[in-house]
Image 1 (tube, rainbow, N blue to C red):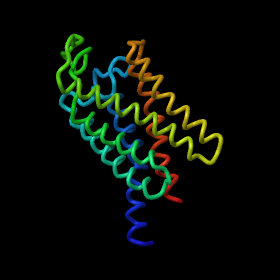
Image 2: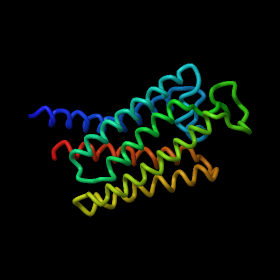
Image 3: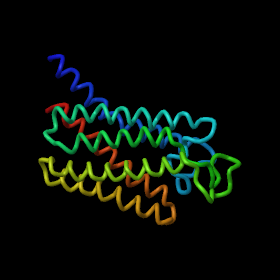
Length: 202
């Protein structure tokens, strides 16, 4: 194996790990950290409180892994836009981790009121999140064009549509919106990581 091939493989492995690691750590925290309630609190709010540094690091590390993975996709995927969109997803995740949301709605403990105004970093988080969701969805739709099977194309399109629908529902204030958002975004992230894994044998 050449030095270039070794580097490419390492980049693709990084992208392969990004979503599973982020999802596993996020969901573990959601289950273990009181009084976090996924039906009321988005996973981004785990960046608040004494253990908030865990979720901040989770976002940043996953973002760096996706950015690294985008360079691997650039070398192997044959797509112009898939690596670009993946890189933007990674940058958006880094920004989302560094720009934390405001506390409220019962998390962390003691912050029961729902904020009536947003801080600059919370606004930044919302902007970064919106960009991340849009580019994640777009990446899934682009990925559909590069799938060899009909099933792969369908899954890619469903993943892309799921992000848009879940985000729109959450933004509308629907019941359990944060849970619906997680259910829409996490599968799309995992599918994007799976795209890196598929390139390892290319």
